[in-house]
Length: 185
Image 1 (cartoon, rainbow, N blue to C red):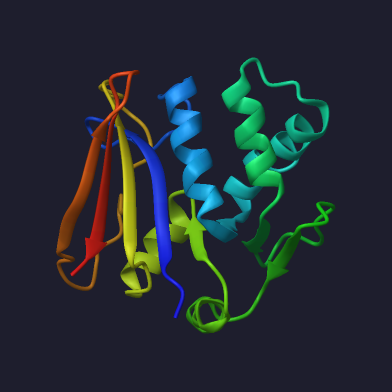
Image 2 (cartoon, one colour):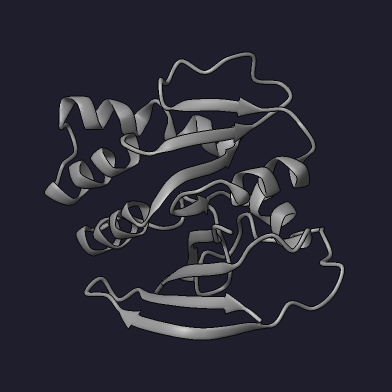
């Protein structure tokens, strides 16, 4: 069975709001490598609409302001994407599709297919998948920033039970960020 991997940037105080953190060469490189180890990306509608068409457009035009942005865009554009939405009518991106079925059932079907890892991004969809016990690995890139306010994982939601994680790797990036890799125990 394929592993479902949650990868996200966050501030020291746990803010997952993308406007609170900044991209740098080493962060783009880090996430590019994660995408290259996957062959499917899962998103909710809001995160999907932040990522597509932005990154596919950068991939086509090579308009990123750094090599690492263009490489991330190429990696992102080369992977299939599934957006979980009941309100989105269609997707224009040729590598994207919409899932409308029961979340747990849809994700279990995807995990059982042959392939590489499955990455999930955003906040709402991953929180639901974590609560369902479907996320196997966690990659948190902690930025040396106190965000103050902003979205947080499980803000207002409660896990059915405490989830224990095992740290399997950590890495300090040039930008001052710390990348942490955990497995669900």
